[in-house]
Image 1 (tube, each protein chain N blue to C red):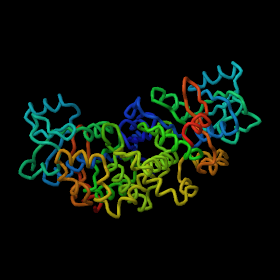
Image 2 (image 1 turned 180 degrees about the vertical axis):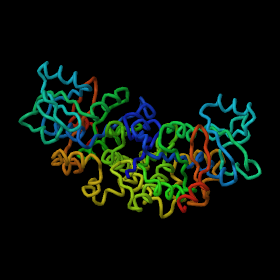
Image 3 (image 1 turned 45 degrees about the vertical axis):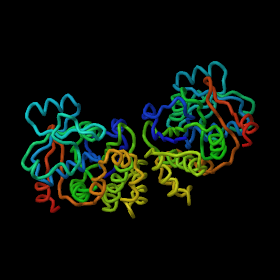
Length: 245
Length: 245
């Protein structure tokens, strides 16, 4: 099985493979927050692309988590800090969710075999699922407004390295090899390394950097969110049973 | 002065800065070949985008160097191996030149302050020019049909690192930081590292890999090709005189 890595949603058309499992990564903060939401007991998440659609979902009675450029939309219930998704707020609830980069990337991948929500926080769960499913893998980094970002690239590298190490996957994709080498550079002190990421500085300026350590903590939640039929559900319970995850 | 790095021509619109010097890199093989051509005494190179335009230039009497996917176009005089550009063939001549990725990237950057042709082979000349000119720098990697490639990324990292080391440049661009870290990984044994690049394997399959060592040899030519008014000329003599290069 082969691995390819797409560093920007604007390049995704070059990587589309309808037989592949696509793992969408937006470490700061959309996919880390989605994982946190399911870990807190959320029932369902509906990713929403535009600000207008987000407003419509709020008007229709959904809990709305929505931000642009790190700032909570004024009609939303809260933004995309993983710490917002507490059991008190989200347990058993359906949440409409719209962010600058991540939710768009998720919708972009909708014609893939499966669309899996990946983060550092649920990395081992994603790896175990992919090792059992044995399909090609495309890792889609959400980036920042089309640009490459370090945190998604390094998370992609960590994921790819673990798949390669299983012996079941290989790659001839330069972006995947680059991501794995960056992961090797960052891994000895990931929290220190990520201080040079542009979004680290963007979040610090807005005093939104409280979640950075959490978002770079490996394997702290056991969730396997997937996007199917326009909604994100947690398939961990189902696949844990089927695959001994 | 700031440095930004664009890993794919398809993302260039995000990085365009009309005040910046753009360095276009296509290590395997367009920009290495352009540098080799001027080192062999070529007078002028006209980059040509499409195959139809390449044919028109041949019909108009120009020497034509042209390839697609590594294969020489059948009506061309030769392809884009740097070893084709011998003094016997090119000294004092004007060459029309069309390749899979590099010549398109050069034309894409035409609204920048200056468009400089960069490669490992002329790296120090490019660095010295940029350090003297003191404008923002955008490094444009030609990639492979829109995808990221390792050799251009690493060359971009080497260039960015040398500019940062001068103390005159800084960066908050994640792609630039990633490229510099990859350069640090590759630098101790660049020739070995590049064996994992996808284009290394593509060229080997076509028995076109004789140029790989040459294309990864630092500072073996003293040329400073720039694209101005639709043609590429070597400005080394002019800037060497003005800037003590």
